[in-house]
Length: 101
Image (tube, rainbow, N blue to C red; front, side, top):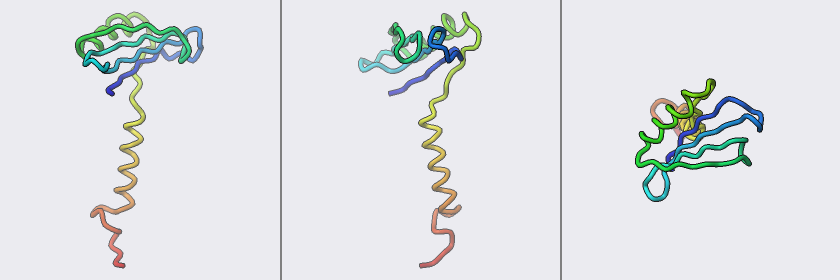
């Protein structure tokens, strides 16, 4: 599932806002507006494409209030870091660092 996320920068349950956009099961894109953190109120809107959904978020949410920022998915960043560490341990040739068993 493809997902992007924005956050208004507030940790307080009373003022926190999160916006998610993800691909729904029917091929449409869904925007989830969350107020008050994980247990807060949720509203959703459906769009035909990811571009339409993101454009609406930028126009109706991000441009209206200051401090909004997109949160980069950390799962992909962690996976890339694991791959880099494995390559670094194996050495540039991918072997055992030149040791012969």
